[in-house]
Length: 298
Image (tube, rainbow, N blue to C red; front, side):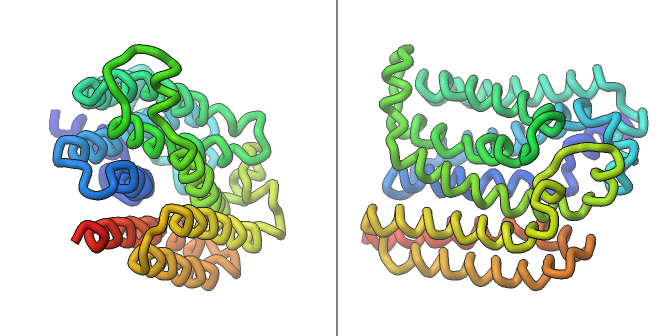
């Protein structure tokens, strides 16, 4: 039993929290922005645990969908599903259990958030298969990894009316602009991730942004970072956020410049390090959001 549990922890990448942190920081940033400050312990716990659970469920789905590809990639060949230690059916059962646990948390919020959760699940299920027909599947991942943003606004502004119009009204234009900007950040760090496996992906015919962009991959990553920070800066200016918010964005920009030094030679180690440390960039922005909210409330 202990050995099986250990395999499940490997399956959901429990030893690699960077994955769920990349999802968590923009979601919590949106939660603070939507609430105009601290959103309350209930919302904080729901979105933190829900993010961890859904990221874990996504790993299960992704590993089943990519098991034939992963056999030919050095970094993923020993994953539980790929190596045969966990069967695809078992992995999907674990993923379903985790997704149901996340849904149970969503049920404690409001009808609007529950409705939006179905859209979030649909994007999560579709993403693993987009690598087969999209030249830049990271575009879909950008939406999937940013969907906590509209859900955060739905949790704060939504109600218990089961109408699509009410669900749409609960998520303002501000939320979609935040998602739009955040999607560029996802493009940046997942392109760095794809650069790690470039040679293997080329051999097996999988599509990634690193292969599509070719020799323009490094400039594109920096453009993606710039677009993310510029969109969020414009949002901050329009919303009247204070200096702390922009200090957070400036710190994030400094981290992005450091990542350039890591990826400019396209070495596997540097690209993976840039990806795995990207959550600090998101934390810098989140810290700016929280400190700004505290200063405005005082």
